[in-house]
Amino acid sequence: MEQKEATEVQSVAMSAFERKMEQDLPIEPKDHMPEGYRKHLIRQMSQHAHSEVIGMQPEGNWITRAPSLRARQILLAKIQDECGHGLYLYSAAETLGISRSEMVEQLHTGKAKYSNIFNYPALNWADVGAIGWLVDGAAIVNQVSLQRTSYGPYSRAMVRICKEESFHQRQGYELMAKMMRGTAEQREMAQDAMNRWWWPSLMMFGPHDTDSPHTGDAFKWKIKRQSNDELRAKFIDKTVQQAEVIGLTVPDKDLKWNEEKGHYDHGVINWDEFYKVIGGNGPCNAQRMAHHKKTHRDGAWVREAAAAYMAKQESIA
Ligand code: FAQ
Image 1 (cartoon, rainbow, N blue to C red):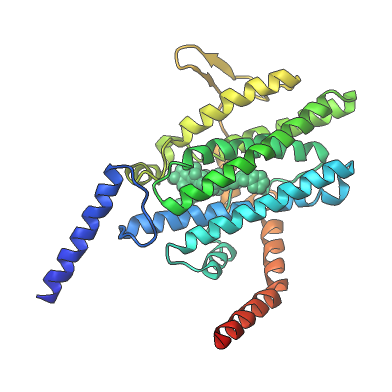
Image 2 (tube, rainbow, N blue to C red; image 1 turned 90 degrees about the vertical axis):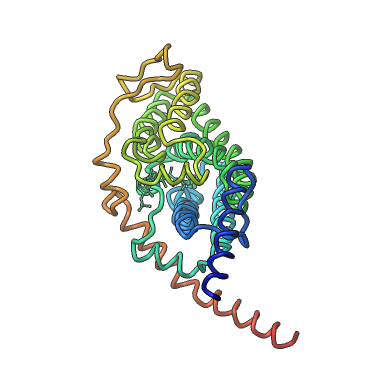
């Protein structure tokens, strides 16, 4: 009898989830949800959070070497925003029943990934511009779409994050535009940065739809609203125009406007490189992880102090 009642409660809760899905209403932390939906979100949201945090490293190297106080202030504010994005996303993921320390553990053991793009080095000041313009530019295209994702805490985090990312994209574009108005050497540096960051930025959208194992469930549960290829095409269309305006050349000889599709056709993406990088063997994977682990270890006393303070407050209350 008890078993029967439990099954009935379960099926009422499941149909509430399905109704919300049909009506495009957000799923909230206390709603019943299929286990697969919860796991899918934990995977994606924790990887997204890790990307924001690891993403501070390539730009962080340039804070002390920024060419002016204005440039340094802007870069510092941007990197601080990325840290904040990581924190919102960890908090949003925690509402699904995983702790922050478990997520960090998964990152450290290699179970959880982070974006391919942060495994490339930022070699010079033009790279800071390319990261803001191309990497944040790609991130925004993906995140604007995620504002309509079905899980309430994730979609609300995206609304705020997108506002900040659009400032990041503009600061990167401004930096590149300024370099393109500079000396021949500065123009060369900007073009070289574009050449190195273009293809990894296209990879940020993930494998082609035909090779993307998670897309089926992501569409079924309205986690994704647009596919990897649709978003990549959107990014290419708008970025090619921006490059033309400031005189940069897109490093793709096969790039061609396709009148019929209303999008650019692009050359072949090097997926071997992508899988190598996300498998842990990119140019900076070892360095990024070693740095994260060390910083995490060094910060243990802060976490311990915060926990002791919380315990003290609770004992007083
Ligand atoms: N990098 O089946 P799919 C930023 C993995 S934030 C690494 O297509 P899905 C801000 C994927 O996880 C950038 N791995 O997967 C910033 C899966 O492996 P798994 C981060 C990737 O989830 C700027 C496998 O390949 N943004 O940049 C990547 O449906 C500047 C199969 O792939 C987000 O995370 C990749 N690029 O689609 C910060 C957005 N792509 O998990 C600092 C949220 C795929 O089975 C400075 N995430 N993989 O081991 C998403 O929208 C999706 O997760 C996708 C991938 C589109 C990234």
